[in-house]
Image (cartoon, rainbow, N blue to C red; front, side, top):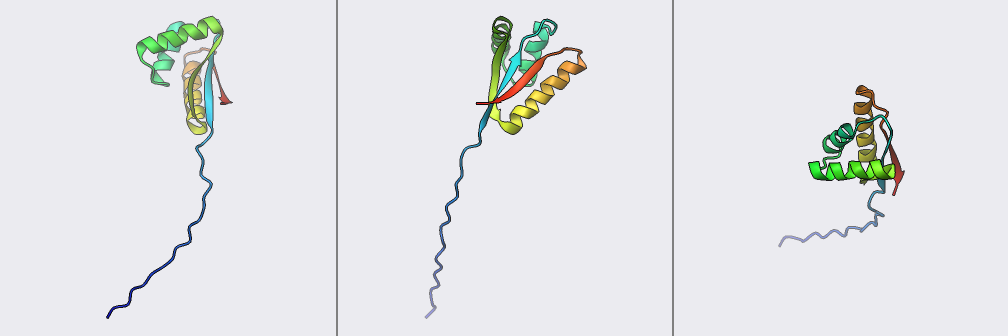
Length: 100
């Protein structure tokens, strides 16, 4: 008769929690064109045409707007990509990352 083996596994508690979120904020300036801001919002932050235009107007009227809330790595990556694109096109567009 075969013997049954049983093993008892210790259950370890892991303190997993959702990663912190960060806001990406785009700031208004007098030199970056509205069309370029809309293009950045569509290509980097994946907004639709209408949402990108509405957000661009919010930036224009209020001097800044939150364009997205992401984990730290994604927030930094998108901010750097948008900033690089702006500099390549000689625009002083400024984006910042803040903890939510």
